[in-house]
Each structure stands twice: as structure tokens, then as C-alpha cells.
Length: 211
Image (tube, rainbow, N blue to C red):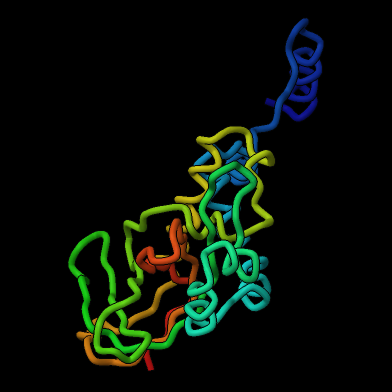
């Protein structure tokens, strides 16, 4: 077929009603523009929080374990007003960003809800539990961040998915040796919820250092 005949055929096709030449979409661009579902959006938001917003926030809001214990002796509300964060809903418990140094006195590294137990007041007894995950329970990390407000989210389901995504990030960013840590010193910074002054300390770590 001659070039002239080819050009004539193209022009004729272009004149057919309802016909037009559409370029194939770039699959890379199409994939990038595909809308994310709730889980993906909350995972992306949690990553952004850990990368950008959490470090300066933790630096400003962290209270040492010994200081927190001292003020808790005066009452939970006193400690909360001084160092805590509480969601606006009535009856919500206080949440704290705490930093503690201690010795590992117990460990469950086999469970999917793995934990370490620390003695942080040098009495030989465990007094703080660090949740390692991958299953991390509760919403302490989300609720300890005062820039996360429920009314900024579509509904309770979306807000709950953010809490889970933050817990997932906490687990994914942990770096610990595989060896038994019992008897070793460890420094932890993280979030915990205290419904009462004498409630157990169960921390979702934002930083965990085993020298």
C-alpha cells in the first residue's frame, strides 16, 4: 500500500461518525491515579504522622516515668492536666507520652501480641509492658496525639482504622535483636492510656533502644 493510499484511508476513517482515535492510557499513570480505599488512606496518613508530625510532638509532650509517678500520687486528673491528653468525649481516659529506662524482666517474643516487661523503678518487679506486636491492642497512640480529632474523620470506622495503622507503624519501625533481652537495659518512649492512677502501664512504643 502506497503512502498516499494509507493517508487517504486514515482520513476516511476519521470522517466516520462516532469514530475517533484514542491513545492507550499509560498504565503507570492509571495506577497512580486509582483511588485508595480507607485502609490505604489511613496507612498513608499513619506513615506521614510517623515521618513528619510525631518526632517533634513526642519531643514536646514526653514526660519521664519518675516524674509521672510522682504526680500520679496526687491523683490521675492532676497528672492528666499536667502531662496528659484526653479526647473531647465525656469520660475518656487520660493518655500520656512517657519515657522510661529499665531492665527487661520478662519477654514474650513468640506471640503475635509480643511484649516485653520492664522494671523501671529498680524494685526487681515488672511495672511497664511494651507492646511489640505485630498485634498491638488499644488506641493509646492515636488518642495521645491531640492533633488527631474525631470530627476531622468521616466516621468511627475510619478513625479506628487510623488507630490500627498507627499501631502497625509502631511495630514495623521496631528494631530489636533476636537474642533474649532478659536482664538487659532498655529505654522506651511511647504512648499509654491510664483509666486510673493505679492502672498498669502498657506502652505502644514510638522509640525503643536496647544498648
